[in-house]
Amino acid sequence: MIYWFKIVQFILGVLLVLAILLQNRGAGLGGVFGGSGGVYLAKRGLEKKLFIATIVISALFFIFSLAIIIL
Image (cartoon, rainbow, N blue to C red; front, side, top):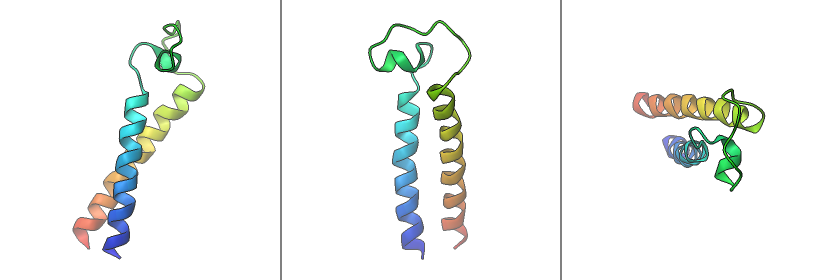
C-alpha cells in the first residue's frame, strides 16, 4: 500500500514542479510561450486555472506525505 502512495506522491511532485514552472511571474501565461507581457494584473482564464491547480496539487502532495508518515 505504501508503495502506491509513494508512486502517487512522485507523480504529484512532478506535476507540482511543472505547474510552478509554468507560472511566469509578471508576464502572464502568454509570456511563457513567447507572447508579449500581460496587461492585466488579475489572473484570468488558463492562468487562474493553473493557479488553482497548483494549490490543489500541493494540498494533495501534503496529504500523501502525511499518509506515508502515518502508515
